[in-house]
Length: 371
Length: 98
Image 1 (spheres, rainbow over the protein chains, first blue to last red):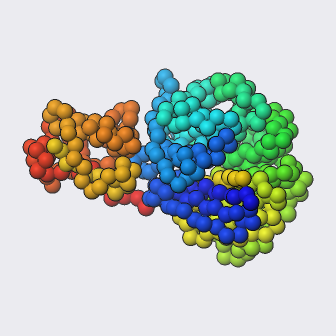
Image 2: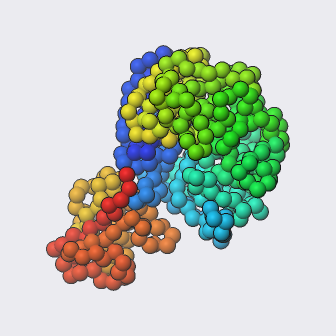
Image 3: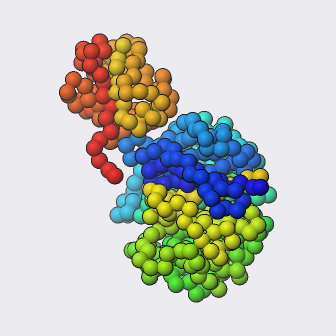
């Protein structure tokens, strides 16, 4: 029977949760890196035992960890992240120029084919890559040095490159998203980039339809249709059918279209999931009810999924990297909350269980479906 | 032989006990001690001082002989008692944060 392994990053360490294909009984290992923030852990699709973790701390900075045995043991690898050449400036919260300074790794995206190659999205916004299993990291400077870079300003969480989506068949094509610059696409394996934000509308910037400046929170793609992307923006849930050339809104009947996480069903490319959050001023779910919303129509028509989720006095948040989907049939959906719960659904969202209740605030959730 | 005491999180990261003993080449200074520490325990690189600027990280302090040496020059000789191993060189995580 298959095994499912969840990689959970929290504000105070990392946890590895495993279950068989029934996804009813879970074993919890951890905390790994206790006391450190683990913004993200992710696994190589080419070698499921090869894991990478971003471990950081306000005291001790950034440490990178690698496991070759599925998360049982870990070793620190390279943690030097140097911007290429003159780092330059971006725009600070008050509008003044501010030097580009490395703070932390937000997101790790392992290559689809090579366990030693991993992309890292960092704060202040830049894209790095290792091709030696994490021993060394090199910047792909075309992102940071984009002509619009000096105008990028941080979101509340910092100027972070938090989303990296690799095309399943075309290694030249990569999508990224930056808060608060927007979405970008490369068609030459990360060498050069262009903004793909046409159709986005953000009231919080002087020109709501500007080329850059949009606070994109997350992108999701179903690998069977790599030209279709779904976006949870600061406000608005969006969709493109042409690889980002144009976007249109699909928020439809959502109770609020603010949120962070968005993901697609493993086997139904028109089925998508979001967790609406009340607003940018609140950062908790509306009406005290934790509800995942599912659209089976590629957006606009949404149904609330509530069975097994708290429907009163609940005021948690679900962050951008904290939702994941396994590839079993029926597919499992997982998400972690700021309250330290990780919820799992083994029936594509119809019903939910909290598989852990009391972890530190959850920052990220990834899932592996193992044979 | 220089004795170094690390904060708990860095002991775990470096997989060491409460007190480290280091051979330092040349005069014992903050720089030579941290150089020796990072050479012996590569996992600590970047956690005590910035890898590019070599400056002490803002929330790290260096204490020895009941003195705060944090703001002294990294090339200033450490107290004799530290250089001889009679007193440890303390790397401290500032009391802050949650």
